[in-house]
Length: 225
Image 1 (cartoon, one colour):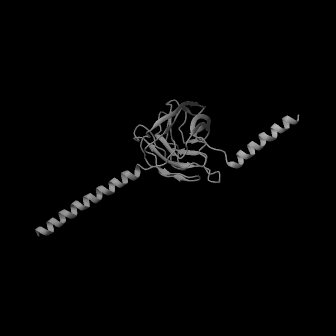
Image 2 (tube, rainbow, N blue to C red; image 1 turned 60 degrees about the horizontal axis):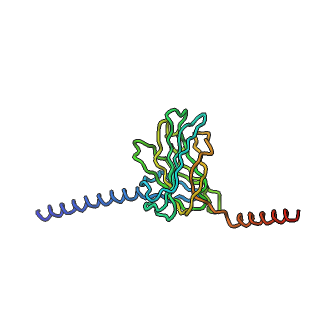
Image 3 (cartoon, one colour; image 1 turned 135 degrees about the vertical axis):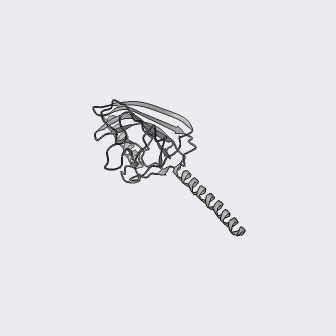
């Protein structure tokens, strides 16, 4: 009887440790960003951690239309130790004014080209609103230029309401450089041309060759004149 009791205790301890290990693996898995390629989507996006490293640039861009009113904050970091990739990390956050007539359903940011990307968000969910899913466009040839952050499940009304702040939206990339770009915030009708930051894309070789050829032809034409 004593041996049976000891066996039960050992099994109980082992079972408890197994449960703890499983929970730890879930927590670790939740902290890992999800890869997002052209034409793909991540549902639901994983919670991540606040990026580390050196802040290279930051923009704070107010936006105003007949339906939306708020601010978009964009930042870019180098040397982010939390990134599984070797390039720059970009973050975006929407602060929607309490006076905004409408809620936000989507944020789109352009110029991610063919770079590798991993996505996640950072926030406690109490004072900010996480994205319901994240998707990326597909222009073909391995290019997915536009990153899309969605608020509210597909086919359901928006979840980022006036007075809300979004979670920190994180895109870790393989891009070595960055550039100024534009973003759009949508409630059914887009507020376009909002200043933002994104990877610096390099033209395709064929495009670069055509551009050089055009400059050469232009120079020859001018010389003949």
